Image 1: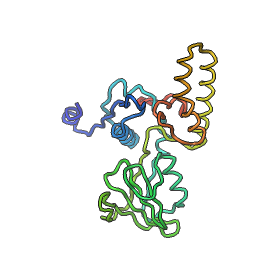
Image 2: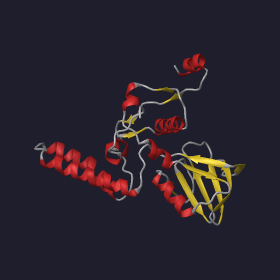
Image 3: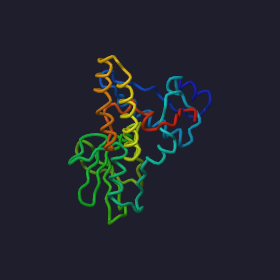
Image 4: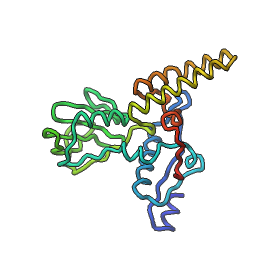
Length: 231
């Protein structure tokens, strides 16, 4: 369909796939989630033609302004505090590690930050001089050798649901209240046990500013304002 549309209209089309949940883990497939995030970024960037199913169009999404604010763009010569950058990466769902092993991780060592964006096949090494980005180099993920220099890098969120700690804490509080209300009004002991096992830990993790394993199911708590691809 995408190829046919591009042929007849003479313009690039963006494919926005449906969510693809892993049945047992109740979480999205990583590759599909990243394709959705990259598609949303292109749409926000002005893409005019979008190929999507009805399910993909109507499913609740993170508000456009939130996604715009979460996107990190690093440019050579710009000023940014390294601690601030690290905090932004954590907010975006990236993990701080001692050595990069895969996408969605970053490693702070001295005046350098190695980052492996989900939207890149190579990690990047950002060299700082004080609070100024002095250089950005692509790094081979296998050999760890630096490659060519680049002027800038866009780093997209690692997951569809990302937010500041304050918003996550509010979502955790809301989820906890609804869980208590559900359990009080439910006489089905098995349903109460299943709900508690599924959502109690998730609510606690959110309250602490973290992302629970089932975070992909909790968009309505983190961003109660309904937003779809049509907005």
